[in-house]
Image (cartoon, rainbow, N blue to C red; front, side, top):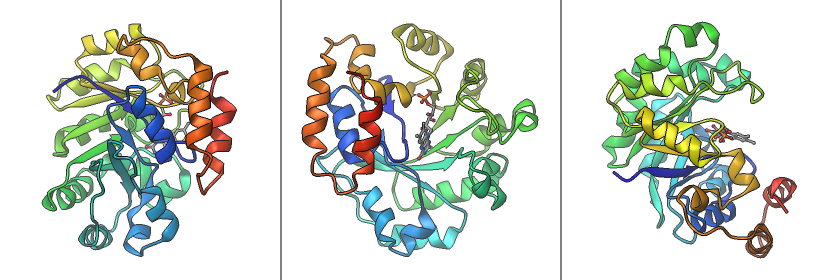
Length: 264
Ligand SMILES: Cc1cc2nc3c(=O)[nH]c(=O)nc-3n(C[C@H](O)[C@H](O)[C@H](O)COP(=O)(O)O)c2cc1C
């Protein structure tokens, strides 16, 4: 497998327009923002809109939830669009509301539940990845619950955001954990604070199969080409392209958010 450069899912930023732009500038794979599969099973319009793929952009659809029957119901009616690569199960969301319901980060120690959801996806013939943090809190991080999860779940690969659920972005992510994750023999994509070629080279030495980039890609969607050693594109050109392709976006929040961060 070639080393993967992935655009991270980011709510209210990475709609299909932004994913298209990042893919044009080297992102091999992109992810939709998290949606609850309960809502998809009920044909919720906003949720269905979030998982739409246009222009053949290579995309995994990110889902979250607990109820196996709702997942099955959604998958029964699901028809993949061109560009669709598989599903990514989010078990890393730090939102307290989700944790209180046994979801998000709380699922990192629910190994058999996660394995069941993954197998439901795979039984339909779809690829299944899992995106996780290092546990819901420091205690779980120290107990290495993330290693149990990775060992016990037969997903196609794992995206590890190297923070636990109580860590905010001002705390540096803990890259040494990637080595431990890779030792399980599973396929690991690294995520958290990745910005430079030096970062990528170091992470390759740790044994990861790819990198996922979030905030740095909002500031510069061409970061993927840059890390691949391709010729750099001027930010003014990228910004103009984004202004053009996003002008017909129905929901204006994405454009508003992206333009706040896109470098001049
Ligand atoms: C505004 C924002 C929204 C996010 N939304 C999601 C999401 O919907 N699903 C998800 O798995 N992670 C989400 N994340 C986390 C990112 O995917 C990523 O794990 C995190 O930003 C760390 O990567 P980075 O340091 O490259 O930004 C979000 C992050 C930000 C900043």
